[in-house]
Length: 304
Image (cartoon, rainbow, N blue to C red; front, side):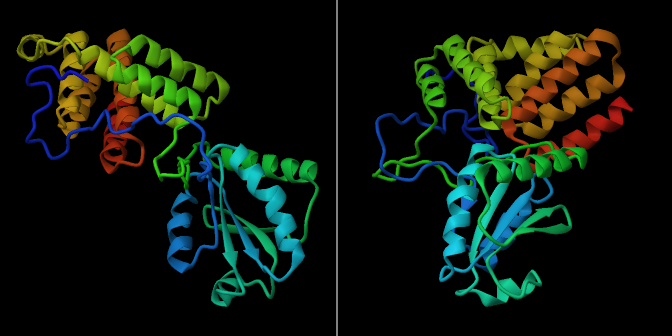
């Protein structure tokens, strides 16, 4: 897309790349996006468990020589993927990695275990009907929400075509194509459709926030915006506008701190306007970023 003069300093090491997702189209016989990791080893398990504070982690301690393992996979893996990031799964070949079976304290596979926070709950060790499985996973998700684990995580495996290029879901492809053409309204509309289909689609939410930032700053007069912010420190519109430019230029901490400080000294509608805008900027950067976590703590202190 066309960059505005001086809107994104080339020297900024932390600049947010807003155009790093390229829309791919066409049919694919490659991999499909998934929240299931196949045949993980010890390092793979450790990586998967990093999600346990956010969503339930399902582990299939599989025994490939036992037909029950294949039957379990046939119903369990599609059910996990259908939840689109509200839970994740790892499949362990316990015949190849018996030490992992011992780590879970299970005498033999197959066994399916749910991990929520620090708790490990055995679920079943034989094939189950799809309807029974859905009810069980619903209960796990409900318990997770009650425990404060109401988020989602991005796919663990991205969809790719035969050439290995990442494939986006159709509405995401539509949004990215519109973004490349600088049709911001069309891009936002496509992401809105994706969110209507799946309100838990964090990638669509982040994409929409990203497009919104690009749209707001597209024709910005950088010097004027910064002058307005300096002259009007109590003007919410001036402060959110310059925070946008800070973020776009890679000054993430500056953008966050500016709005947190404004929120701390403001009240009423302006305070809430700044808070909502800050939450949108968090979406642009992504909740996995440490700077977002630090700023959220500062925001909580400013609010309470």
